[in-house]
Image 1 (cartoon, rainbow, N blue to C red):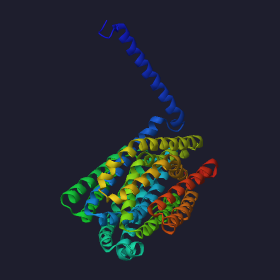
Image 2 (image 1 turned 45 degrees about the vertical axis):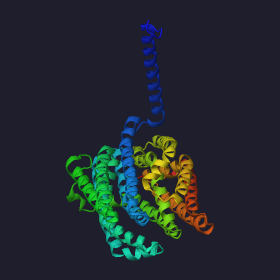
Image 3 (image 1 turned 90 degrees about the horizontal axis):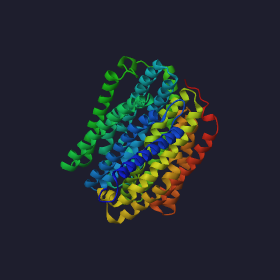
Image 4 (image 1 turned 120 degrees about the vertical axis):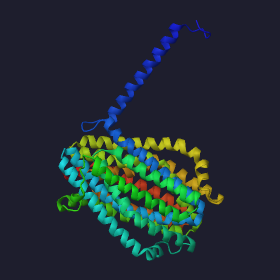
Length: 481
């Protein structure tokens, strides 16, 4: 007997009981995973092998974006407002490149699902070429017309904010081709399910960016100029690393520069069938966000800073769900490529449910940490309560509305249903987020909170529209491969 009155036999018996409990729990977990995340075309191990690297990638992207915003806040509210303004334009333009790259991802995923390795290679190469051409054209146009662009969009901003914005916009434009090629390469790799190299490439680029920001902004106090230099260097290195990987180390895509300069119209048409409607959606969708930003300018620099910080913190809650919205393109694309509609339907609902679970976990962890998070930005005391209100509204709405409103359209697009998805997204954006946002924020005087509530209402409308589409058969009727 030991000092607690327990015999050696009893201790051994308890250990055995614990092992049995662990074994039972493991079996139940496997059954649960099999039930919701395993089908004929893919099992849960393969699925989570796709999701996990993208999750880590999104975590680093969003955390580093948060740190960058926090670091630039040391240069004052004018710098934060300028970066926020231009970043809304950057997101608007970069998403056009990502849209075309997504066309390549969908086609590559479907060819991968059908087992056609030759078309996987050709489609990936053509998608990279198309994105490169798009990015160079857009970059050139914006640089030439940068002054008039900022004047039209943000002419009511303060002079100091506009001056910072001009410098940041030109620097961002120079980096567009770098980030566009990087997105095209990683999009093709995600299409064939190779998410680990995507993770490594993204980590390399974003860690480089953050280290340079620390050196140039925090140590040398270069402000917006430091942010530009770090962005240019990091994106250039990221593009170079991604091209070296697909040229020398990847055998699935078999990318060759000589093939990239030859345009294959038959393949390009299929890529653009998905990519162009999505690009148009991104232009008008993010154009709506941009227009929202223009009437936030009317509310003053403090309101713009509130909006910028609120967005940065809200993105932390979306790390897991964002990863699922990217992963589902590969997962559903491969299901559709093998013509397994039952698996596609099952995985769409399972991943939407998983995204809602991620949001609940994020709410439980991040809401109590709000005082720590807000301290990173060192905002004026008078806007802290408003920022918390925005975050609280998002935390309540995320699990219910965000998941179906953003993961569902990604899944429908992966099946080739790009036209309907784009039109529905445009209508909801312009009728609700823009118009309702203006009415609530400006006309009724609710300010930033009114604009934020309009965004939540739009999520609800998107959820209803895409849920209705999912119940029918038209979304998977497009035969692309």
